[in-house]
Amino acid sequence: MQSIVPTGLNHSDKARDNGEETRQGMALVTSQTVNDGPLFAEVDMGSDNNATTVRATVVQASTIFYDTPATLDKAERLLAEAASHGSQLVVFPEAFVGGYPRGSNFGVSIGNRTAKGKEEFRKYHAAAIDVPGPEVDRLAAMAGKYKVYLVIGVIERDGYTLYCTVLFFDSQGRYLGKHRKVMPTALERIIWGFGDGSTIPVFETPIGKIGAAICWENKMPLLRTAMYAKGVEIYCAPTADARDVWQASMTHIALEGGCFVLSANQFCRRRDYPPPPEYVFSGTEEDLTPDSVVCAGGSVIISPSGAVLAGPNYEGEALISADLDLGEIARAKFDFDVVGHYSRPEVLSLTVRDHPTNPVIFTSASSKIEDSPKP
Image (tube, rainbow, N blue to C red; front, top):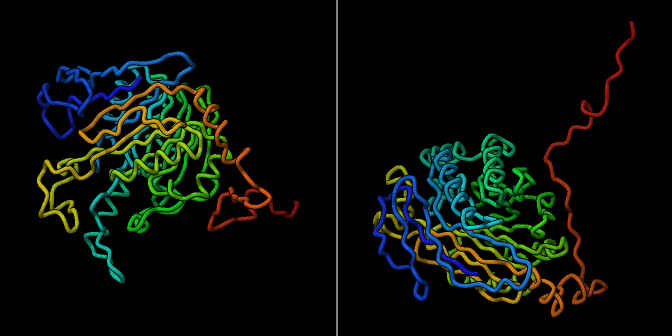
């Protein structure tokens, strides 16, 4: 089953016209735009239930920038709506909690950082979350309340360093662990730290082995190989890349890994970010209106055979869902098992340093008790 579930409301908009059309070729089911009604109405595209399936949803929606409590409220509404349609796994975009600072340069040029840019970083740091922390506890409670596996992009605060991170939760409301982006892209490197090999997990669950890589680190062949070696079956790819060419990368990964690929991106308009001068899209602000699309989504679900099961959607906020036939994994691996029968370890091999790389290690107090003179 494939379904595209268009949004009924946006946090910064009034309710839109219920007659608004969805993507070409998809039937439209309208929903009532009342405050206590569902955010989404589901579009059923038909199904073939001849094998064990997992109902999965990728969320395409915008952060409420600089307002983490409101973003968590929005996440819960979306999670509840996905669960009401039978979803067992829900994947949110990169940096959904904490925000993706699209268009900002944080006042940085070579050899100089402005006072305004430093203040922007202070506010961004304040919107990030501690892991563990109260926001993680709330996300865990959401997963347990709605009985879903939850994969969600956050901005993690570790002291005064930020990381672009994905958190994993099971359907019993337990926090499973995290993945930190190992290589931030371009200007992201001035605001995010680098993850290490200790946070490249693949979690074995009753609905499959789940892992994640974030945005352009999906282009890193060795990182993907490490995940394949851990047996990833449901490969989550939260992203901020809405370009058409992103779809080629997602299809390639599905074929290469013999896994399902679930890519979730935000759909954002200029009005989803604070107005200028508080927040400025560097180099393009003068060309933008409040309705200008600054991130067009493109969220998609792809099977191990490379078939597009749902999406890509470029029309607005949506829940994009599909039934994953887990039998497809074995059928795909019969053709190509990149770390199995199609590998040549005597010629090519990979070593992953999967221990934490802490900058400071104390060797004394925690493990040794200093001798003290006896009375």
